Image (cartoon, rainbow, N blue to C red; front, side, top):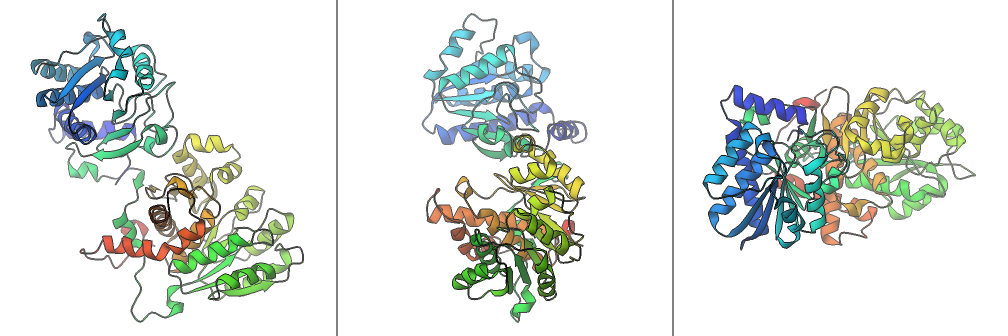
Length: 526
């Protein structure tokens, strides 16, 4: 499913009208129906509902909802319009006329009852926010600002139409003040605000409603897409019946130090649980010893490191180990020390394996170590991305989409910005946005597990963009299974790694009954 910016939505609505002959008022009717269906699930027995409308097309959607609710006779419907009637857009005026003919009597800002009714929103069962749509920009003010404040002050559950009013569609940041919604029914396409900025929280639970755009418009590409299970299941390699372990990839994990052996353990475990045939760990001896006590299936290259950290003299042994491998995971738990940076600098000057670059390897790049000349996937969290881009984590989070694009331009390769709705970017590819995972995954070691999954898929000949996208989805899916089985908070990264085989099996099973694609999607072919 493609993700649409405000400009894309405007262009598609215009195309629907001019080329397909679908009037805007028809799209409004379909939007009203979609929101009404949501309301019926929240208030199946009826109730008192206040609908706050703006002067534009979003307000027209709200008026369409008001008429549908009024016609049932099961809802007490109040409509407050944050404008004077003469300021309405032509399409909104059409919906106003239809609503009035059905018996709805809206209250405008020049009505003495406006402020009094705004102060009484707390007496309703539900509030519908149809004040501002995708075209909103600039700081909110006047009656719209009053309405937003009234909604938030009421404490009543809110359903937002398309976008919570006051949230910028593309950046997710608020325009001074914005509505906190329980549910958002976004129209036609998911929008960027759902995945970053304040919009991530203010949208609440969200769904995408089909409001009648032609399929050719819905399927026309944008510069970002939402990952789905069908795409991911097509990308994940199938295991041949006659497969040998060497047919399924060999990952080299270069990770761990004496103070942080667990990072290496988690990366190795995740690679194994992701279906790779062989995993070799190159690490200090003490790290190897710990890993082998938990995972005897691993192969180890124990390196003599008296201080517990890798150093430049270990580069030759690691290069020798890499000869028989298909991919590498580099960075988890290495430590941020000059000796580690010297090791990576020397190693990468001769490096060719497709690699996952994570954690302390990312910090080494931020400190000046050149990126290797191989294909690679970088997996920073916001703090690491800030160091890579020479900005704060807050600036990274301000516009995650733009940050990923800038990082791809700066470093090349594939860039994965971790966090809620992880974003994957690559040269000449649309951004991929993940929809799996949960807040329980905000705990130690989750990034190490993700690195192992990416490494396993790279070892099975997936291009970096596809390997990273599929790995992020699978990682989040395993996290969702952990939340269901163990509880939403308190499950461990090792729990997620252990559930990877089940997550993969459920993903493939959910897509059975269709013809499996035997090659990569066109966007992922080399």
